[in-house]
Image 1 (tube, rainbow, N blue to C red):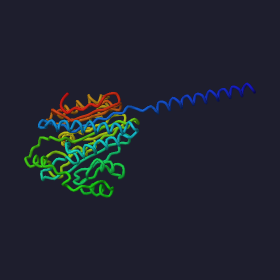
Image 2 (image 1 turned 135 degrees about the horizontal axis):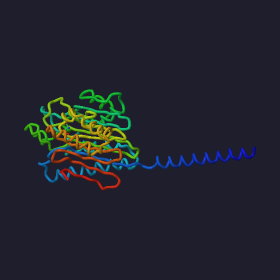
Image 3 (image 1 turned 60 degrees about the vertical axis):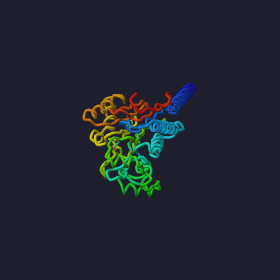
Image 4 (image 1 turned 180 degrees about the vertical axis):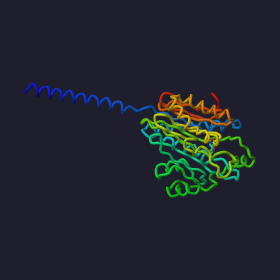
Length: 327
Ligand code: ASP
């Protein structure tokens, strides 16, 4: 009897030790912070008629924005917070075609588009053709988190922004003589770029967002790829995140962002391989553009078929990479 009790106690002790050991292992592995990485674009295009101040301005804005976003995640913040924060900085900077720097339509007004996606649950929010919302990316996130819908446009979207207490501005907030002249002269060659961000946080969550004024001289009411989930923006945990920039109609027709993630998911391609294949397809039909991609480990791809794409990348092991023209 004593013998039996002793073996039972021993068994119990072994079991308890094993459980503590396993708990310790799982605590250790779950408490290890994962890779943090973030990639940003400031538009694909020519950037050929920019002066040195503008080039340096774009580079330093990207550098500051990506470092602030990275720090948010380093402090334990989410990739969604990083994406929103970086895009707000770039929307407030007239050097980019988003928010304050938005280009003009053919009737000389600005209509802004933006979207955001949470890769942890495939939740998404987007806005199109808003005219008085200072930061369309904030509105996209508000829609994602507070409504049961994904996409709102113009007046309806603006009403949500007002009700949500987001900052509303007079249209002259977006005024730019230079951009107005470009629209008046029907110059399609963009000098300022759409902005986009993909981030991976320490919890393994990937988020992506894109914000734009669209294309100079676009017809009133025209909506590009940037607010279209799967075309200009996509995020899916354990697979990838994408933000695109370029001739939006082609990005919509080719479902660019989702297509890249599908190649990675179902064909086991790297971010670089998948992005190259899709951008090559765009080149084949004469469509200009580029994409930024992050895989689930935080490895980036920054692929474009134009002479330049303003872009930046940061992870824990490298210093901040910022570049506009081809390497
Ligand atoms: N993709 C944007 C649009 O078509 C423009 C851009 O990225 O330059 O609206």
